[in-house]
Length: 275
Image (cartoon, rainbow, N blue to C red; front, side):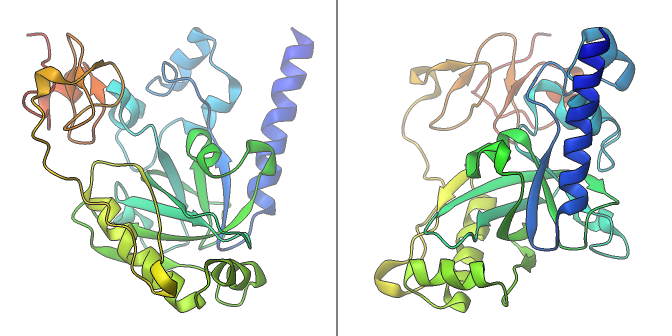
């Protein structure tokens, strides 16, 4: 038991050092993988035997509690912003933080996350990603990376675009794409706005012929009937899947059955909560 406690302490210390070693315009990661643990409060996490890393997600500051933030499979792609990003950081709560690597290589993947929490130790323009999201971009052992990221509403309005123009990795990334850094930023902005409006959580930025024209990511209306789609207990919605009984499909595209989940924003025809 003592050995396990020591290991847990070391893991928490490493996570703490990563956040404190991070700079503006960089990403780190926090939290845990366990979907069962995400919606639990601190006491119930301990009862459930959740990994100690899950406690970094206790009392998410953008939501009433853990159940509201993560219950019913909500917000599997999540992030935390610095409390220093604005006089009142909560103006960005529940918006999307969309991010792409600027590591000097041509890595076009962009990932959409829900802003669920805040970080008081993080620099102003730092973004802390959930582990699942971070691994979409890099292995966890990489720890820290330079990025371009922005904050977007669900209708695609850009509230903030954040990247380091003077960073050599930013310039090298633009060169790898065959465009200027300004062109790359414009393409990111346009693609991110479209991604925010769509039901997707990831897409690739595409610059055709050295221009800043991105790949369109708006979701097409599907002619496929919901009944012909596969059944899911995870992702759901048009062109994706229908939730298995007794789950409904939330407005964010995740299956769930909590009372809070079922009362708000279920997509008609893609699952039904048990009465």
